[in-house]
Image 1: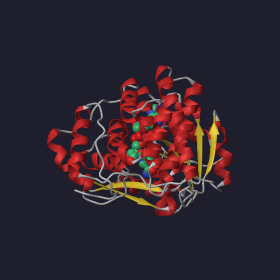
Image 2 (image 1 turned 90 degrees about the vertical axis):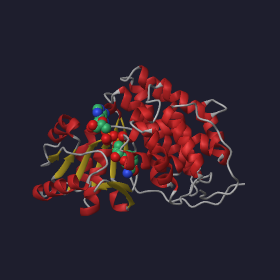
Image 3 (image 1 turned 180 degrees about the vertical axis):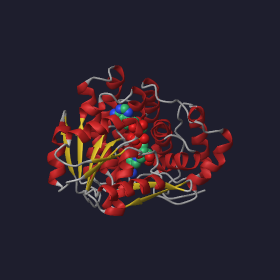
Length: 365
Ligand code: NAD
């Protein structure tokens, strides 16, 4: 029998295809932009400047200092540039870091945003913003930060380096996996999540084999879009909590951390999320989804362990404590000792082991 659900779609306009960036000027005009500010990281400055040149009929400015984890001091510098330029809109070209900067400016100014993603992180599909100040990362939800328009241009992803393609792709898969067992899940998101996982696991090995393969890149970006919608629409569980903890308190890199942790989070939740596991078995073609995801990571050359990302044995107690000290929904109760042993396995890159779940859902210590 169909379970009860609530469905709330997010208002967004999406253009998807090859060469869609050509439509940026008309999309900017559609949102009434006359003097947009183009945002990027220092590494993608040349691409952002080329994009400004495309907007020659509009007086576009540029700010090229987007940084991982959206530090508030960078946002303040960008706000000063926006005020000085009298910008009336934001165009962010890049991955989650650049989208994050755009969202942080939109939160404070309510300016319209056009996102032009070049990784698979999915931030452009979410009303979520994480910001860092004084070494602490805080996350909030606000409709103000959801970009009005997203232009997915597959051609912009052809040069995404192989290592980043692998970790960013697995980061995206994690959004869809956790959507499958989200307590506020719904049938539409489950359909999207299953299609997303199927697209990503088919595309990523092909992308790694031939990074310029336009068909595989299109499939991966399509999957990433769906994964982003999953992340933006329903609540995430243990996997995202662990990655947030490891990134925020131990400074581990975002996408590689997601890539390492996912199989272990799946192994932990497997016995408490049978419907989600049925989908994963189908899409991964394996009776053990956690092991299949672990093997996929190896095949894609993703980092094998949290140890290689800088986590130490002496961090395990604190990490397990931070990840379990506050209650949040997860199919299997959060038992601190079991989470510690999950992290221990991930630290060493051991094959993920499915362990037994208690029956009740909620939090335990
Ligand atoms: P990123 O944006 O930090 O990009 C990593 C590096 O790759 C940067 O130097 C970037 O300039 C470069 N790069 C991006 N695309 C490229 C391309 N096509 N070719 C060459 N280089 C390219 O990495 P990310 O993983 O996309 O984003 C991570 C950040 O996004 C984290 O801070 C994370 O918390 C945030 N995030 C937020 C949400 C949300 O919903 N709020 C969702 C996902 C990620």
